[in-house]
Image (cartoon, rainbow, N blue to C red; front, side, top):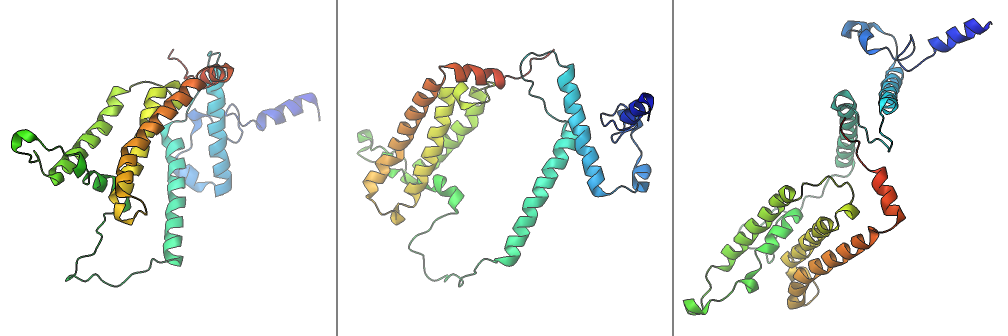
Length: 258
């Protein structure tokens, strides 16, 4: 084999889309009928798909003049869509498999003539149910003869409105482009405090099932989020100093627009 033949074979084996290799160039995309008539199997097509994705990513990195690490992504169609559909299909299949092999136990029907001792919503609504139990925080106004301005139930509904409103406003207040908690310690600490408060207020919702003093549980409901927020802010603020923070900041920096 001569040197010319070796060069020709290398050109035929290219997979970067520049020759008659595995992945065809963009201007030679086959039609649907042509793809239907091909005899290649699913494994071959899958390999071509990932090879094209690798080539596109490599071309983008080669053409970029940014000195730092480029944070690049793939197009939504077909790359992200195919990947997300594959993941969704896998978990859907797992759910069907578990539901078929381990069906849930169905208890006896409820007795409509008797009220249960403890009535609770679904677990993911415990935090909202706990806000309805903030009666001790409902102040008694002496100007009204010692009567409460609003009923405890109404006070709990207003507490739900306030909490949901704060959660909805936070994304509009924080419009930064930080990708890691250490870059914005304050908002990260607020997020941790909110998660801890959701947990403690959920425990307050099932206070009848908690093996501890109700007054202590009520105090911890508001004390633990403050402690978690303070500790998180202090830790993240400390992590902002040093070589590793500067190195990671350069590593995760987004490519500036051209």
